[in-house]
Amino acid sequence: MKFLVTGGCGFVGAAVCRRFADAYADAEIIALDSLRRRGSETNVAELEGRGVRVIHGDIRQPADVDSLGPVDWVIDAAAEPSVLAGTAAGGHTGRRQLVDHNLLGTVNLLEAAARWQAGVVLLSTSRVYSIPALASLPLIEQGGRLGAPAFALDTTRSLPTGLSPAGISEAFSTAAPVSLYGATKLACETLALEYAHAVGTPLVVDRCGVLAGAGQFGRADQGIFSWWIHRWAAGRPLSFIGFGGRGLQVRDCLHPDDLADLLLRQLAAARGGQPELVHAAGGTAAATSLAELSGWCSTRFGHHDVAASPETRPYDLPWVVLDHAAATARHGWKPTRTPESIFEEIADHAERHPGWLHRCGG
Image (cartoon, rainbow, N blue to C red; front, side, top):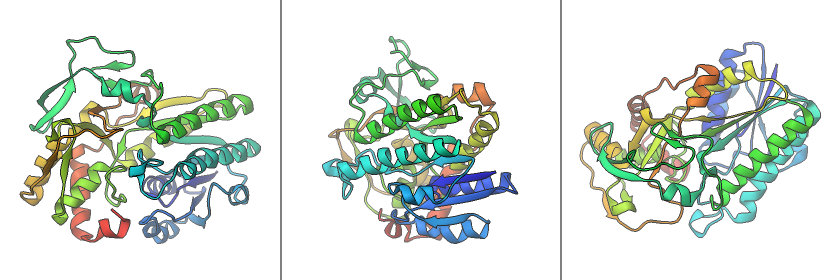
C-alpha cells in the first residue's frame, strides 16, 4: 500500500502520517509539503524517523505531484486554512493565491489520482456552510459544559433544515456567501465527487470541525483553542471580540489523532462508486465557549485579563457545532479525547515551548 499525504508536515497531515505509519507497517507513506507554513519544518525529522518519506514540493505544480505516483491513496491535507484568506484581514494571502492553492492544487491531485486509479480523501471544513444561515441560528445564553456562559441552541423555536439539538448536519445550507475560503473548499468537494463518479474510484470527504492539539501552528483564525491557550500561558493580550464582548461564541474541538482513527476506518470500508461525505468533529460533547476556555485557563495558569471588543466582524459566527452522527452510524466512530484532555495537552506544550507562537508566526 502506498499513501501520498499532501500537507504532510502540517499539524493535521503529520498526525495522519504518524497514525498511518503505526497502522500500516509495510506501507510506503509520502508526505508532500511546501514547508511554507512556519512550524511545519518541526515535523520533518520525526516523520523521517518513523520511515515517512518527506518530499519538499507544491501541489500547485503538477510535476511535483506527478513525480510521486502511482499511489493507492491520496490524502489531501494541504490547504490555506484561514477563513480570512483573500480578505484585507487575511494578511499576506491574496484571493488568487487562495484559489490557486485550495482549488487548483486540489484539481492537480484529482487529475493525478484519476490517472493512478487511486482513492482520494479530501479534508474539508465546517466553513462550507452558509454564513447568513449560521449567523441567524436561534440561540440563547446559558451555562456551558464547564459552567461559564455560552451560546446554546434555543430548541423551543423552529430549527432550520440540517440543524438539531445534536448540532449541524451535512444537510445544512451551503448557500453563498460562505467566504472565499469556504467557497474553494466547497468547490473542491463538488469536483472530487464528479471525479469519483467519472472514474469510479473511492472518495472520502470529511468536513472537519476545529482541530486542536499540541504542536498546532497558532493563529487565531486557524486554531482558536491552541492559540488562546498559548497566548494565555505567555501572558499576551487577549480579547473577546463580538457578540457583546463576553466570549459566548461556541465551537467544538477534535484531536487530529481522532480524525486519523476515523480515516483508518473509512479507508477500510471505502469502495469505488460509493463516495462518502461526513462530519469529522467533536460534536456537542466537545462544544466550548471562549468564556469557558478562559475559565479553564484561569484555573490552569492563573488569572489573565481579557479585554472586550463588542463589535462583530465579517465571518465571525456565534455557534458552530458539527453533528458527527453520520460518521458514527457508518463506522462506529466517536471522538475519544475530551476537550479538557486536549486543552491540557496544549497547555503542557505551551509550558515546554514558551516561544511557540513566535516561531509559528502567531
